[in-house]
Image (tube, rainbow, N blue to C red; front, side):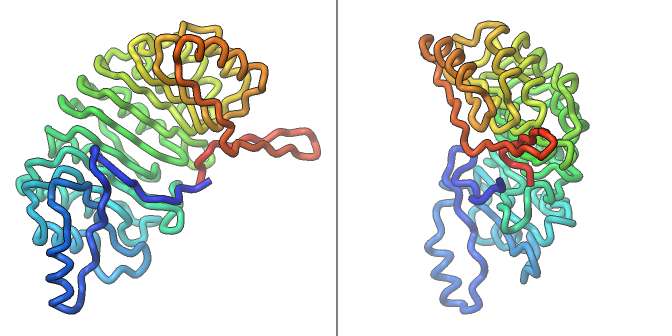
Length: 326
């Protein structure tokens, strides 16, 4: 499966695509007059993925000249030209360079790109932690794409939500996130992906996250879209951080009865408000045991198979897939 829809919101605000320029001056003036308030939406700034008439940086400069940048609270970086071979370094640098103009900025998402623009596993990324360094008041950071993604170890006092979506998340990125000190972080979501697309991390790389030592405020943990979902469940079953969580999301991956049994045999999960396991390969028997154990305690459990399908070769080999790979 690929991602087919752009973000509908970010930073708690509805997403709004900043329009392309009008050639006619009167139409351009009318378009500007119809824009929403600068602080009322998450501004999605994007250019054509192929043969764009302007660069992302030029579109962003036009955006800063059009709206009141001092009131902007959220920016969504949409497609830049040829994201399958170009990093968004120019876009990141442009936002960083405008930091004095953007005092109210609290949320940034880099790479709101859908499959028809560039498949998730082809999206080139960059050094996204530059945004954290430049904006100490930033509260939400999201990234899509794992190719060339860099996440240096950082300390950030105010980041509350971190989302990294990938068809394959490099181990170096997982380690960078895990080693970072994020005392205000409430929501952490990592799409770990598959080795076929560069997802070479293992459960040992997740150990600092699962200990929770650097994440004292964490309430939602999502370790999703992984081909090693069973091993992750086994690690989560005894992870200290789980006792502090309200929401646990282990969905979209290759979760089988082994992972489900590990969760049932580990620490109690009945304190959770929700456990998301959608897109799974769990048998009806193990699914019933999970349901009986958790829903009676008031846990909202999502066991929807959600399109998870397996293929079997003539030799009996069974192939199972994550929800988002390419």
